[in-house]
Length: 407
Image 1 (cartoon, rainbow, N blue to C red):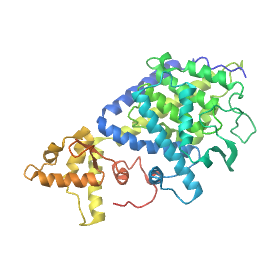
Image 2 (tube, rainbow, N blue to C red):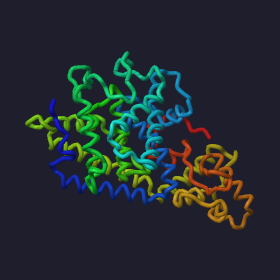
Image 3 (tube, one colour):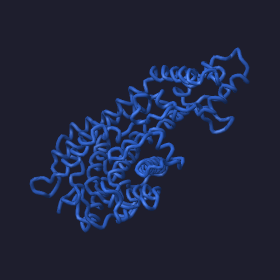
Image 4 (spheres, one colour):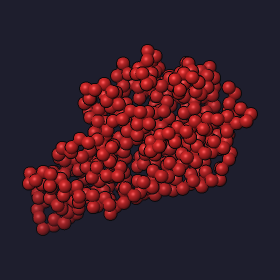
């Protein structure tokens, strides 16, 4: 198989792809600019649960946000299949959190090198129990180890062994090296950076460099590559959510782009362009979705709704002072508020500092407000039980599970 990855980005529809990439970059930057940095950091970390949920849903493993949170606390289901899904999702959250921090603070010279992509794979499987570090299919675990972080030494198939997928194992190392050098981030500038992310997503999925876990690693890689390119650094929108909305269409787009050209020396440029267009359209769709969700007027009304519903459920037992809503809204909008200003923000100038401190203390206790110390500024908190109130379109019942809220 003498297929080449050249050209790195599609030669067809390039002008259209550049326009779309520019639209995605502007929309993503605008979304980041609409929300305070501290708020974006807190919310972005919670959205990692969604990235994990949807990425694993694509692979056929369904769980819930509550179950993912429980798994991160080492609280697992007694059902083997549910526990396996929990373990997969928890590993995804932890790896994305760790590597996103590394990419931001100490970016790798070439994020496409196998040293980095192999690290994604290795860290993911190291977070799973030893007996789950074997290839997994419709019939459960096989006797073949995944070889965490190491390139596969045999061929792989996506249809039960009928046809091989990607290059032969012997051809994989030089083809991967071509991929790594071709998609080095420094090779691209301006609009082409995001097109390269889309193109590299397909190329890495086709290479299938590992025995198992390639889909998850590819989606993690694309999110990290975008961060390296300065896109979605706050993690305010989810590429995996977009792909999972129509899993079959996602798979069709990837597989169509696998088609070789007439000379069988490269990939069909028309299909390649179609996949990159689909990738960028998915990005834009998810950004627009989050723009609607993060509308400040909607957030204000949802904070009010949460406090009303919370006190209705709890009755007269430890109700929240209604003025606490003003502080929560200010924290969401501003990112943080000095402790000394909390009383004024809540409109309590006529009350004592002690009364205001009591309200803040209750908000901190319930996780609605967080602070690094008793003197540090206050920041918005997103405990699990408020997510369905603040962001009902994002954390809907199918994602959240049907477990009742416990205060």
